[in-house]
Image 1 (cartoon, rainbow, N blue to C red):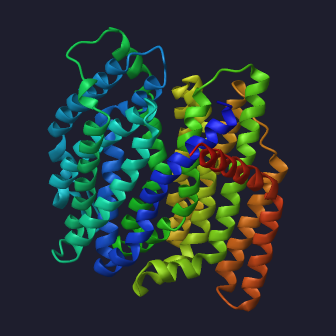
Image 2 (tube, rainbow, N blue to C red; image 1 turned 180 degrees about the vertical axis):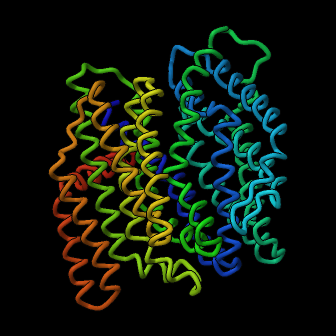
Image 3 (cartoon, helix red, strand yellow; image 1 turned 135 degrees about the vertical axis):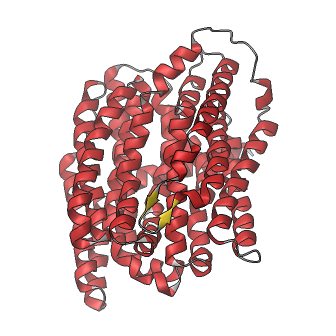
Length: 477
């Protein structure tokens, strides 16, 4: 299959699953923000984000190795999953020894020990779900991966409505709904992909454990550094301002997920194409450059539309007590945009198995984020955290963009990217300064139209690939 068509095909399949799972956060926001106060919502988010940073440490980020090595046709897939399961179980056993010290963590009015049993269950179940997801995706079961996204959406909705509605379990119910949904996903993968057939008492390739750990262990600090860039600001907002302020900031951070929704659909498919096929350097450069232009153009266009509509979206998605959170949204959208751009460059490191360089480039952003959070949050509150995150991702893009040229010289078309960035900055500044009125929206619409005009060709290219794929599939049927 032509590599562009294969990318379009995989993008469609991942869109089905990813759209449903990512759309979940928007579907739940009106209900969750009405059932939980800003303080409870902020606490629930901190529990979830704490688990998100514990999982790569506990599992040694072995799910990334499961994806990369299951994509390698020369590797025995049973060996790959067996190593993944063993690593996860052993890591969880070690984690239990440290559960009590972790429970002593306290940040302002948030006490992690109140939820330590949930944290333990969350780490185990979600760790296995991530392992199953990545192994299934790397093994070519992309349709099962998509179906799981739909099932996860349905079960999370069901459990959340049950636990927060009739049962009124608050923070506990919110977290327990995610755990229960993840457990359903694990069961689904085990049955449909027959994963039990891949777990063996012995390994055919004795060095596979060493190879996988050599690949994934350097990714642990990388994932932690990304967590620092993306999430540490919520802990600092809680520390300096309180859980209620973090609740508003968390609600605001959900809206930029529309950008991530578009990005993740593409990235899930792109990672398979980035690894698959080893053309000559010139052809790879042309392929990566062309795909990057289409991808970045789409990301910037979605971001521009979101800034234009951020007040309306906030009013629709959250309870009235959360409406002020819209003020954090425009800057967070810019941060998320560059997060998506940086994620594209991560595919270069994945294809080249250069996990150490992924770590070093992420480190530059993490240091920037921590320093600027300490400077900005005490002075300007939660928007200071958003500005720090923007700066962190810009630093990572610069360092990663320069470093990846050693492997693939992607043509970023920097003048176009600079103009796109300036449009987003102008939209954000106008939204925060003018806050409302007809003149504001006339200017915002004009800037959005300019963004679309700049990216009309990449958008047409992306739409053309997908539409052609649908037409061909229709003819076959």
